[in-house]
Image 1: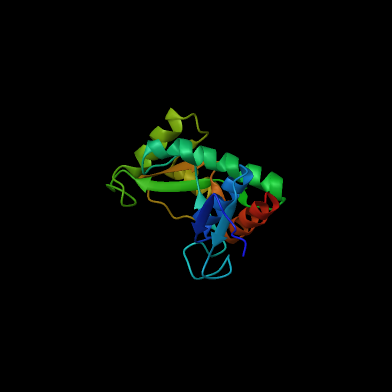
Image 2 (image 1 turned 90 degrees about the vertical axis):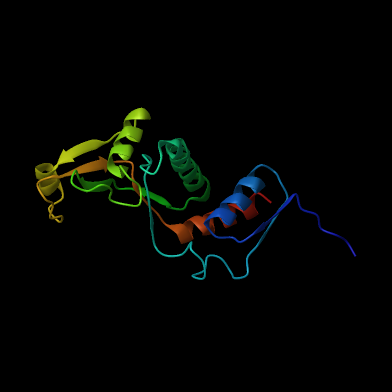
Length: 172
């Protein structure tokens, strides 16, 4: 009986596992990916039509270079696979000076702006009137402001998993 050997075995082929399998195979490693179900599937956290993505990270500026690199990697995978994975349609964050935070992160809005400025990310700061004019679907209070990032958008998680796994197989 012959024994098959692998450099790496990845358990779980959702967003993270499929990416790991792909990037290892791309580097010439012998990789085995194992999932309890046939990916992509709706039995984990990597299912559904879309996930938002942005590059200025209000949860911590230290994550911004990782987010910037992830957008580069998505574009590389799109070119290699021919799949449409990342749509950059812009992202709008609306906050009020009266609110201490809009999420679990204190100062999220200010942190996002600071990260964008620190890393040279194209963005616009909009006052309430500008938000109403450009985005009439939102009813904003006079004290609210907006952060608009043109490179933000959404990923198609199930398509990302399919592309990662297909290209991992293509790399051996």
